[in-house]
Amino acid sequence: MLQTREQISTRAAFFIPGFAIACWAPLVPFAKARAGLDDALLGVLLLCLGLGSLLSMPLAGMLAARRGCRPVMLLTVVMMVLMLPVLATASTPLGIGIALLVFGAGIGAMDCVMNIQAVVVEKESGRAMMSGFHAFYSIGALSGAALVALLLSSGASALLASLVVATGVIVITAGSARWWRSERAPHEESSFALPRGVVVVIGAVCFISFLAEGSMLDWSAVFLHEVRGVALAHAGWGFVAFNIAMTCARLFGDSVVNRLGSSKAVLAGGLLACGGFVLATLVPSFAVAMMGYALVGIGCANIVPVMFSLAGRQTRMPASAAIPAVTTLGYAGVLLGPAAIGFIAQHWSLSVAFLIAAALLACVAVIGSRLRVD
Image (cartoon, rainbow, N blue to C red):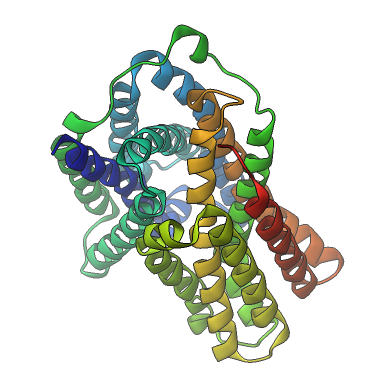
């Protein structure tokens, strides 16, 4: 019974940051208009979100090792809840930037520590559970975005929408925090350490997988509009296809990993994602592009969860140091990947950039499937 409650509470922990961060996306145009931001300044401020996440992850891992997961996760919830209404009301670039930095730090720390908890809970269950945990992040993001969009469409203010989301986060936390893990790591495992050995390879695989996800988020609609000539009103459906496919694949991912094994699951996922990029890039059809983006979502869905499981099982580093290292490398892919895609597109073309991403995913399929940590 205790194991079941811990598993449910871990799913809730994954739902929370997805639900919270999804609130920010519909609020971006409001913040831009309220503070009179141009595109360049908005781009700089948006970097604060990722910067806060990257800076907080190693610190969160250290604190979780010394204090246990529960206190750190509760602190991150406080940071998110306090910053949501600030993001809905801040009217200066400095105010928005600071709020995004703190909000990003809370999101990043939660992402790191919830994966530390998930590794422990999965180990104790004796079966693959990581894909299902990560699915709840996606479900949270879809739910949060839909809720805020519905509230704003019905005439609610940005502040009211943010307060509704913050209340939801508080309610979910109150119902699940009791079963978040609180044990501490041995003293020698509670300090920051650079990734080494197999952890570097695991982090590199996560970097490329997150790069592909970031490319879908930032460039799929641009590609459909500018290369395929799809109307702006419909270009966003590419990311929708990717996101829904990834969420569904993660819901069934644990059974797939349990049946195929982690090596075959990563091999199949990497090749599917590679094929999806190739299809969407080379075949001049909107329907085929939708299928391609969905394949990228299905393929990428279980690679990162498997890598986190491997990071928790490897013996080169303690999990309390390995998980933050892998999480940080993965998030670096989210931040640097889309920028790299833009650089390549500027010098060659967006099609070339997507084909390079496809080649990297093929490498992930081979390298990730050959990783051994047991």
